[in-house]
Amino acid sequence: MEKAEKKNLKIKACKIRMGVIEGTYNAKSGHPGGSLSASDLFSYLYFKEMNIDPKDPKKSDRDRFVLSKGHCCPGLYSALAERGYFSHEELKSLRHLGAMLQGHPDMKTIPGIDMSSGSLGQGVSAACGIALAGKLDQKDYRVYAILGDGELEEGQVWEAAMFAGHQKLDNLCLIVDSNGLQIDGSVEDVGGPEPIDEKFRAFRFDVQTIDGHDFDAIDAAFQHAKTVKGMPSVIIAKTVKGKGVSFMENQVGWHGTAPNAEQYQAAMAELNKRLEELEAE
Image 1 (cartoon, helix red, strand yellow):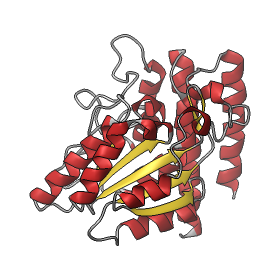
Image 2 (image 1 turned 60 degrees about the vertical axis):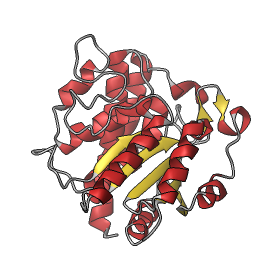
Image 3 (image 1 turned 180 degrees about the vertical axis):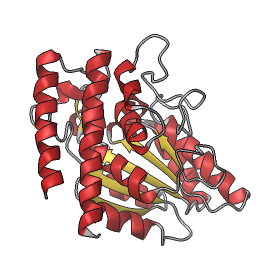
């Protein structure tokens, strides 16, 4: 990846993280931990990978995206705002009564949302349906879905994986945000879905495992996925819950806790400093 392009993606990811903090602080609720862990993935998808147009959110040949772990929508909303689908000011009304941006994505009211989601496990099924529709309609669009590693404890994920492998949905790319933590503790202790890679291979997926914060690795994985024929792809992205805000990193309590005023100031100061460093590179 070109140095300038990677710098831009890092800057976008930092700004997405700032939007996560802004949104959850103003909402006084929400899920910052998993939104922060996926921010580099959101940056890559929305500023490099996907064929999308904020001026025409419903264009027929656009790539589709499903946030299967819908509770991490603060990250998705921040990416959409940064990409130009709506104003950054909307982030400040996250979860407010009557606001556009609620606690889970709503395809009927939010531009850029292809599928309403939030019931864990169901987003992968929706992505499979969208991918199959693309095959039946002989369309070239690709379908991407991010799910959590804790979400892999849902049986419907594996039913959908069986379907995707059987249907040879090579236009489907799943991304597992594998940050190791879920609401009740570590994923290993709560449900123990490992070995994730072997399970997906058993369902006839092309499988890659990467550092989900390394843009060179992210780029290589997505470029490879586009060359895969005859089977769906999954990218298992090893990430850090709360990435980018030091006191939130690898702390399970930040799964669904909003920052207070003091924590908000500390987090934004840290992210602003990081942004200045990136822009100066």
